[in-house]
Image 1 (cartoon, rainbow, N blue to C red):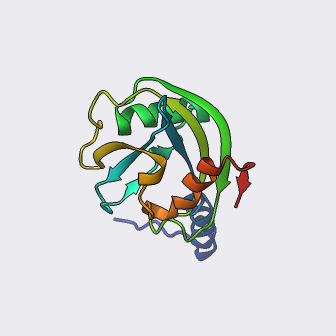
Image 2 (image 1 turned 30 degrees about the vertical axis):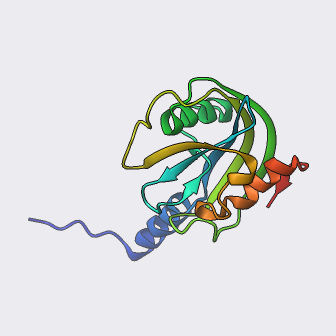
Length: 158
């Protein structure tokens, strides 16, 4: 059986292309989701055990608005999600140890959660917190994202 011999230069080119294709920041979204009575909806993550803003990654062919609505429905069991103002864009590479994420955070007016999370291994609990009850630390350094929403700052770009 003859072996296919690929020149070293071709391997270098393939590795360089793979490095650029596979090592790109991931575009994520997060919802600073607030109920009509002013409580903030957070989800408890199964991987860290910490509370977080509901959110995830943008899927192929999806707009940011569609992504936010889908993630809030899947993670928090919320049917009504009215996307509002931009809170900020957060891109610090050390925020998430899994990958370099660029997270777009938007404020959303939401209904009360009515269903459990779609994936109970990913999200173990959903709860609406009054502003004074929000945990001091959130998963993946999200406390500054929620703090910006609470203060109603101008949009942040990190």
